[in-house]
Length: 309
Image (cartoon, rainbow, N blue to C red):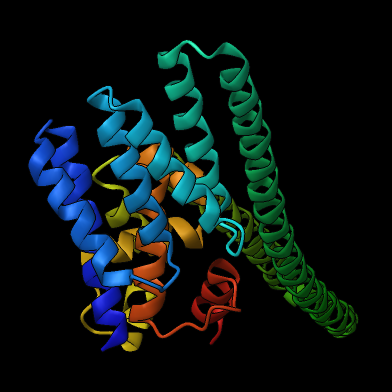
C-alpha cells in the first residue's frame, strides 16, 4: 500500500514535468504540489525532483527568489540522502539561475560543483561498469578454459583411438597384403572426419562471436530488430524471464536485454534517446517486478540467472 502511494507521488512528478515542458504552468504547479503532498515527511528522490521542478517552474517565469527557495529546500534534502545524479542536475539548475540573475561568482561556484559531481558520478558508473565487465570476462574465461579442457580430452581420445587403429591396421597389413588398400582408405576417412570436426568447431565459435557483435551494434543503434535478434542469439532468455513474472512487457524485456549485455544506465539512456532518470525509474520498476532485493547487482544477477542451467 505504501509503495503504491509513493508510486502515485512519482507519477504526479512525471505529469508535472510533462506540463512544464508544454509550458502549462498552472497544471505543472498543481502536479508538483500533489507530488510533494504524497511524501510530506518521507524522503524520496521523487520528492527532491518535485522541489527542483517547482524551482524550474519559477525560474522559467523569472521568479528568481521563489526558484532559489525551492532549490534550497531540495539542497537540504541531500544532507540525509545521496542521489548524485539528481544533485548534479540541481547544481546545474542553480548555476543557470545565478547566470540569469547576473551573479557570476555564485554561478561559477555552482557550475564547478556540477562539473565535480558529474565527474564523480561518471567515474562511479564507469567503475561499476568495469567491475561487471571484468566479472563477465572472468566467467567467459572459465567457460573457455572448460571448453578447451574438454576439447583437449576429446583430441587425446581421438589420437589414442587413431594410434590403436593404426596399430591394428599394421597388424592386419602384416597378415594380409591384400587388404592394404582398404586399410589406407579407412585411415584417410578417419583423418578427414577429424579435420571436418575441427573446422565445424572453429566455424561455430566464429558464428557465436559474430552474433554477439551484431547484437551489440543493434543495441547501440536502437534498431527495432534488436530484441528479435537478441532472442535468436539467446533463445532461453525470454522464457526464463517470464518464469519470474509472466506479465513482463516487451519494453521491460528489451530493457533487461540491455542490462544483460553489460550496458550502463547512461549508455542505455544515450542509445535509446531517453533521460537517465527515466532509465533509473525503469530499473527500479523492473527490480520490483522480479522481486530482486536492493543489495543485489541487477546485471550480475541476470547473468547468473540466465546462464545457469
